[in-house]
Length: 225
Image 1 (cartoon, helix red, strand yellow):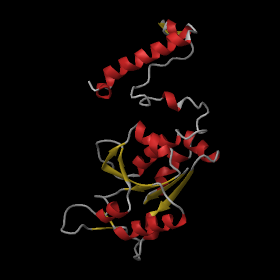
Image 2 (tube, rainbow, N blue to C red):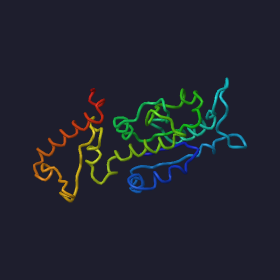
Image 3 (cartoon, helix red, strand yellow):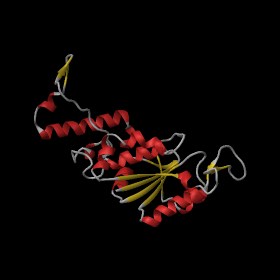
Image 4 (cartoon, rainbow, N blue to C red):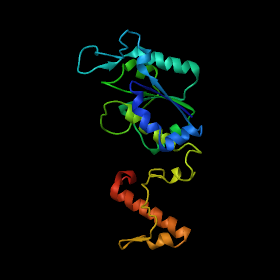
C-alpha cells in the first residue's frame, strides 16, 4: 500500500511514523508513506498557500492552486483509489472505515488547515472526507497520522500475530474484554479462574460475555441502547 500525505508540516509525522508498528511496516515493505510539502507547489515568491476568504470573515483559507498542482502531479504518476481530506465535518473514523481503507492500494491524504480549503478542491478532487472526532484541531496532521496508523496495522503481514487485529475493539461492534498476564496473583488480586482453565470453549464464551458487558457499561450506543 502507498500513502501520500499532503501537508505544510511534514516534520510533525517524524515521531508517529518512525517508531513501532508503522516503522516496521515500512521496513518490511508492506506500506510506503510519502510526505509532500504543500509550499513546494506555491506559485508566488513567498510560498504562500493561504489567503483571506472572499466576502470576508475570520481566518484564512488554503488556496486552490497549490493543492490542485500537488494532487495533479501525484495523479499523473499513478492511479489513486481515494483522495481523503481530513475535516471536522467528514465521516467519523471507525473500525469499518479503517478496514475499508486498508484494502486499497494507493491513497492521498490532504491535511486541512486554517478555516479549511477552497471548496472547489472538495468538489473536484476529494473523494472521501474523514473526521477523527467531534472537535477541532489546529491542523489535519494529527488526524492523518491517526488514520494512517489505524489502517496500516490491518494490512496482512504487518502484525506478527495475524489474528491480533481481528480481535481489536470494534471489529465485532464490541469493545475488547479485559486482558491479564503473569503473575496470576499480585497483591491478592487474582486473574479470573476461567482464563487459567485451558478450556478454550468456555474461555471464548467468557470473553464474549465480558465484551458485551463492557460495551453495555461503557459504550451503550454501540448496542443501540
